[in-house]
Image (cartoon, rainbow, N blue to C red; front, side, top):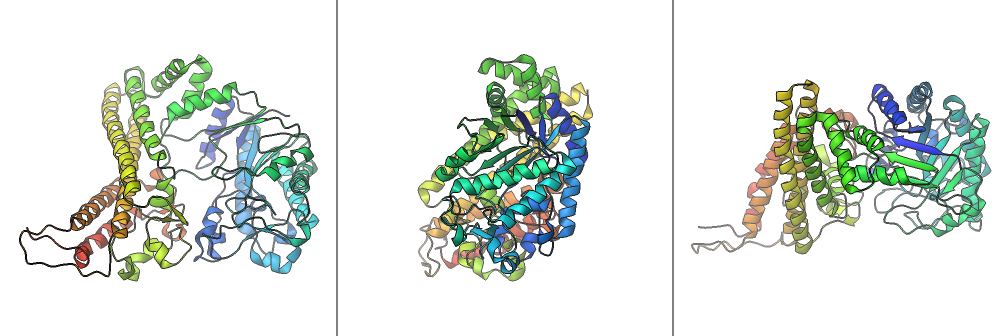
Length: 596
């Protein structure tokens, strides 16, 4: 098996990519992932009422880089040219540095429905999620020779112009789907004529077309990995069994044709970013680097996140210098990197900050679902008003957030804060109690982080070696404060829906003249939760004002989607607070009010 060391660092422009590539080479990379593509908004604009394709828009499909002539009537030429120009520019930078490009893709990936109406035999598996999509999407049938020929042509063109020689495919997620696989969200399905074909023939035939296409394009030893095993899903045994049909330098689910495990992946190959980027997890990172460094597999992939202090690069560099043999020595690696980041005097304090921040993130991870993404972002908990009667909101009070809820069912589903893409994340008193214990610990760690950041900023200001260090620490301080607001939003959303779930909205509240009256504690809960969220919205608006592009993946209002916030988020947050203030007396419709 050919040796491949891939480092992937998400970047915002070509200059950032060049810097990241130089650092990757210094750290021992042979390849750098070059396929981070602009979001394909055209997919959603075909039907803005269907949120499902937001998962697809950020993927780097093969036909997003090169469009076969047969598909030109159906796919947007200008967008494809834009994506390929970016990919080729990155590949040229890598060539200058003596590195190779890698591509993380998702295939076989759905095509517009009209393709299949005009070419029925190209229709493969239904690949959408039936609880999240308003219509069916189909991937192309990779048993069909005409489809395979299009893939082979596209890969040959890409390789000819870029030298691409490592591709990591995933399938059965985010708009990709494999015929008659147990892992598609709609269950095993595909073209009837190929029902009795073996999974080995299907998968290995596709990989053979990709490898041959790369060789057509002048790449003599392409390495191709095909992954179908995803977290939280049962392993796909029929796909794993297809390794018997593999050729040299072809891999299925980390194993080669001999059944040997030949891949080590740390940090994942997904293209989706965290909602709040730039928050380091450096104690986990140094352990991950250690695992990767000692791995014997010939193909290694490491994802290094971008942070304000360039933490990941500094830590990896210190690791290579110090060669730690145990956890205590790994901590010495972190301390060495911290000294490089902020100087000798502040290094110990920075280590404390890294530890406290990671503690907070680990607490939140214990919820089991990424509620920051699935709830705060995808259901727009962060900027939608928490009101008892959302069905009575006016159109102008809903329009700024409703379209950006990842909610494919009816309005009743959309109004339920805990309906997360057909998944109930947190429901009932016990679940909410457990979540509030988690958030309490996380917030305590985040507040300690912010206090220590304030102290470190003072230290660095006195040292004054480099004003940019203070600026970077101040931005990290802002990121942590923003993260705290999202954690509070998550808690308030879960508490509010639990209150709603035990409220009969048709009941007429008692209005006794008895004094004193404090019988229905739900009235005070409603007031407490909503006031907490109003104050939280205002605080977050102030933190985000003038800093949106530093803090989030965001876009102009007309380009907002479910994975990106609008640059007008601060305005939306204040609007949310004002709508909630306008509805503060709604509790009196269903709860007995106080008379004390």
